[in-house]
Length: 105
Image (tube, rainbow, N blue to C red; front, side, top):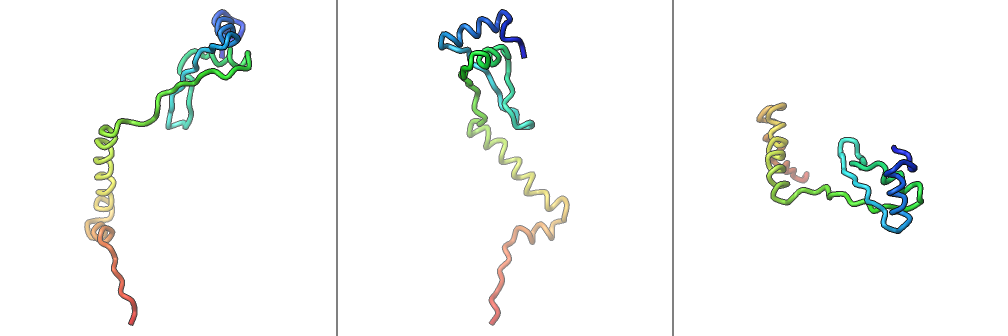
């Protein structure tokens, strides 16, 4: 992280003191389950130095409904085909068909 006293750090600290801190841009990375800072690491350093909470806008993690449906349907079909591939058609049929038991008399 850059020093809070370098050129950009001083400018960001001045903005934070004036009440208009520069935003810190984040992005969701699912593999690491974190929000890393995209750019401008001097912005959070200046906010920390001035004890100010900067605005943190970041894009939502959702996809449009049509794009989600286009990706979900093939994935579900591949998942449903797994028992046939690994266990054979007989076991796959048994897994799909409901088991109806009768009560003892």
